[in-house]
Length: 333
Ligand code: ASP
Image (cartoon, helix red, strand yellow):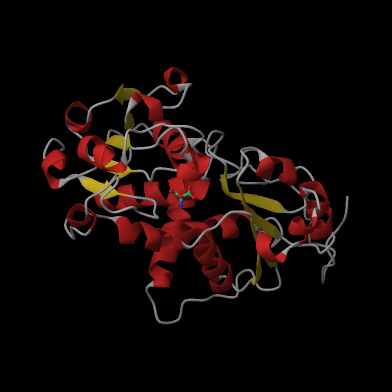
């Protein structure tokens, strides 16, 4: 076990997990499956403060100055990577990003060797995305620092679910009691899984709407409602989250054709009429217009919260970086 070089002896070791009883008693953020309502609320409340800060001209604080954040992305990303970089910089961290194209992974280094290499550089936070479910957890076991899962395979994408929750809470006033429809390629979506766990924990009613081939195999164990037709699935919805077809994770034929898919499961104004009048439309991005969502619905300024989700993403990631490094800064988590 290594210690961080510090200015004072009062700094704890890097791998001190917050004591149980603290508002966020976790060393890492690997998923939402293990988050209780207190921890979730703590992140969302902390993020609220950053929403305000991010709207000011002067957006950075030196709160995390001197700490190092590494973003290690083995899969493509626009929103998540940029947002973690901006979040770290606004907290005053030294933020470094690496993608597989520039790393030794291409030269055959194993994931665990990469972990050992990065660990030797004493980062304080590692943000990682990987195409394999479970890869981020595996790496976290080898790291002294806090690890944040920025998406692993089809398993989890916790900061996406947290930013979605913040968006819903701000627009609807609460998560509890909302009927949230998650529609599209649920089977391959880590966004869906993280949202199902988080929204259920917060007392929302979750309904999945997808063709049978795009529902997860363990759907019966998820504790959600299921529909395979948009008309019945959208009835009474307060929120509709559309998902991209994750073709990179599909092996074999799951769909007839994209045209047919849009016809039956694409979100159009006509289908949206089955939901509540004040329904909120969400999408984690990247969107495939004309496949899972019609352009006029995505761009509907009254109902679409898609750009707001991106804004909330920066605030939520600042909150996560802040909370996970509080021990290092001698503050209570
Ligand atoms: N950006 C999200 C993810 O990384 C959703 C998507 O790719 O469709 O899972």
